[in-house]
Length: 295
Image 1 (cartoon, rainbow, N blue to C red):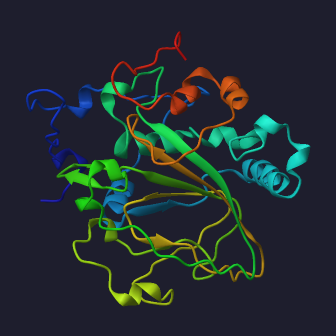
Image 2: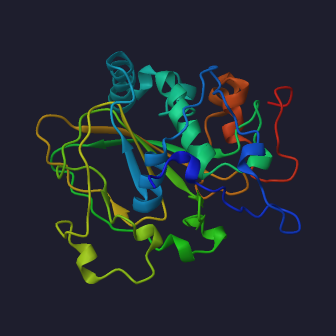
């Protein structure tokens, strides 16, 4: 018999009290972002790819005009930061701010990071905990394999990956917006696919960027990539002579956990729509379901 979406059984997820089952269909995960746009849920294929590989690429998410606007701000931020008001002087400033809770980002986080008890239609069930601008050009040769083996890490580490049949939780999760084209093997992020579930120590060949252990990708400008920080990954030498690498690297996490020592500028935070501000609420679980009156 051919499989269809209807053949997938619901996962049994242990809720907070007494081993009760948390039914995903009865949760109130956020359905619109702070701009009122409907959240875009991941397809079954995208969920499967991310869970099995530890990373997933969604090409060409942004329109040409959106890419142009965000890219121009990115180069201004890098080359002439003093021309930008201080509180906007970050990859959360200007037109980049709307990418923080883009409908696809919210859809992904609802699936792999959010805690349903701390989500509502006014409040995201996850946090954003870092945001940086990545710039690479010819001659930049960074390579430093790190992370991996996420199934076996304690939760306080943040770099973990937990799963049961039908459901997975990614822990600390990276979101990358590629603002220029990336050619395969010419400087994109490297991954040891599926190493977030590895049970063995990485071999010495992991230190060779040309090892067949490493996978990478190509994509047009405006593409979106997600990867769990539990996967072994690395930056690589940029060799693309046609354009530099310009990308936004952000991290998301559960509401009660924070790995990075980073917060947005207070004035920038104050200027955000109330729902977007809930991405940066205090790091704790108890009594941390925010309403619009609180945000």
